Image (cartoon, rainbow, N blue to C red; front, side, top):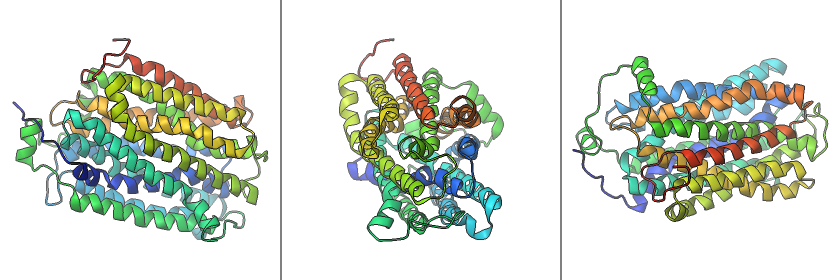
Length: 448
């Protein structure tokens, strides 16, 4: 018989989640700038999604393994914290090297180095990210999990806002050059990545120093006995086959949601450059193209700011209408925001489109995990949070493989239609979440 976990204070939940601010700071720099960096090095628009494949592929491999072994780890640093630290150090190195790939070699060789740095960054972020999800689920009771993941989402939003806006701020506030010769990355982007590495490291240190993890004996009182044998890949496959029903149902929701997000991250820069700034696809180094890329950072910061604020409302909304309907409503807002980009002519209007995306993003980062956590068996929190990442990475891989050819062959290299497709997939996610089983929900939604 397991004991009820004690309620934690706001300060404890805050410090436990603070490292996510740093993770998302680095992630936002990547999301806002990786496509334009790779295009600076010579990537074609219809090949961009292939370079972005390294993120979901590494996540699919790394996160279940990290989750499995972190469930069985305990040393003087703790259970999850050793993985935070290793992932942080590796990611900070990649943040410094990615925008400088053109310094080492030129042309396609620089492109390959840039893709390699992107892979290292993604793998490192995954090493850091998965244990954070598990740490919140480890330490919080079911009644505090929605609040815990909402605080985590708020901190994610704050980190992402500053990370997304930083290149623009460097150029406009600190007068760092936003121009560069063909094949090179502008200084405002390079220095932003340096700052990102520093923020990433310091934020993780806050959680490392101030967050508490339950030692093994106390952990078992709250979660039950843990299987300490390192069964490795075979056990992970067994756990995958035996995943809870709620996780399988959420898998469809996650497929639609993350297919849409991947399309947005990869194709927003070329879509805005061609559809709104009216540049040809061949223009990837002009000042106008760099202006479009900087503006993408601004609007991505907007959706992350909206996400941070909306995350604070999620516990209240979920208490009123239930977690499933909260998530469905939020995803509908995201679908409307993405589809509306097609009808925009003025770049400033994109700010309003991003409000809907921000609402969806906040919910995507919080509600599926709040729904999932209550269905995971004792002692399996880390591995199942890692396995759940499969439903995030698989749709990105599908989009990465087929998205580029679809844009090239069906959309005639007009990336704006990939954004519209993302909106349609977000709408499908909103419909599918209604049919998910959530035994811990405070409301009974239609479809049950």
